[in-house]
Image (cartoon, rainbow, N blue to C red; front, side, top):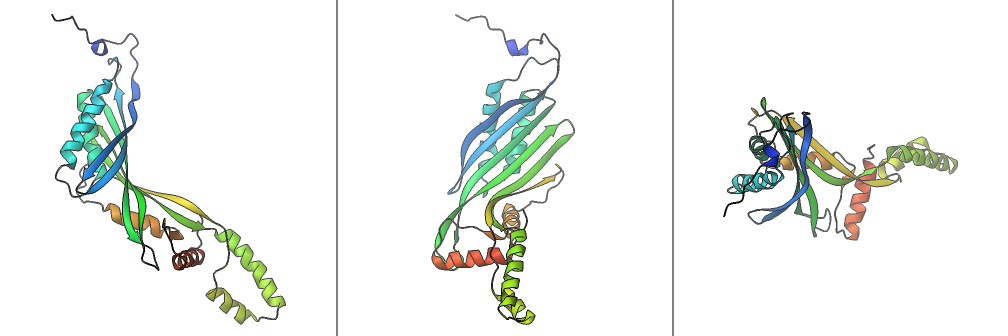
Length: 249
């Protein structure tokens, strides 16, 4: 026995108004490439025309699963922007939408040695990918997110000024004071920062952008990188490095 079925979403809407950014957020997926696991979170939206009653919500999940299978299989590394592009183009086609937008954040661990002791530490980084597909083509974004330390240069100058007065009162010459400040990092307050770097490029751009290089840029732009496990020698090296390179956020 076959029951009559009427696709309500395919009917004409009672109010003909275009809707932008209809979709799903925080779709979680675990992606494996080789031995590397990525914990991915996706947002996916479409723009609907005035004659569309609504989006087919289950199709978002179907397209995400299909795209992960097509893009990830055979890859040696996750390219979040490529995955975002495939999902955006497929969603736009499946939803018959004017425009589709996808954002991906994939978190993954990376092992690196502490600066002095060499002890292995595990740091969590984020790969960012984005894509917007429309009748004019697809634009993509590639990005990264990493944590680091920034030491405040403003407070450092205030501490240095007070220290100069005390050293002068104690009989040190200007030349001796300069030597002291060149050799000894000046105290200041510091904070943990979250650095994000995103680059956009057109569909016709075929040159691969190295995400690891972007991570290096983010970490080197701060006063110091961080480590989740440090011995005393590592702690001393990190504090000195950060206070010798004070930076405003």
